[in-house]
Image (cartoon, rainbow, N blue to C red; front, side):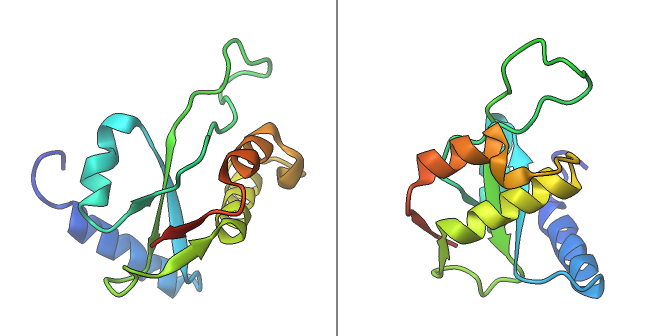
Length: 126
């Protein structure tokens, strides 16, 4: 699909499925820096914090966690201009850590702690 102009259609399809699954509100994605602009072009905003998810594929990490951009988007097109509180971001990251990475106590994980410290009481426009 790369370079074919289909990202907005893919994002809309994912949002329809999330709604059908009973998930609502805001969704988050992890992104390498080189891909941020494409996602910003379809309505994602960047979380202004230090986001380093857990290292995967190894029991013992051999390198420090990679810094990724954490992006967020409200469903549909009407989400622009609203504020997303740091607590909403941190709750979303806790959900990612728990459900995607299998972290039992996500609010205590280094990834969550690092992001929480870097955000402070930030509100970001969504």
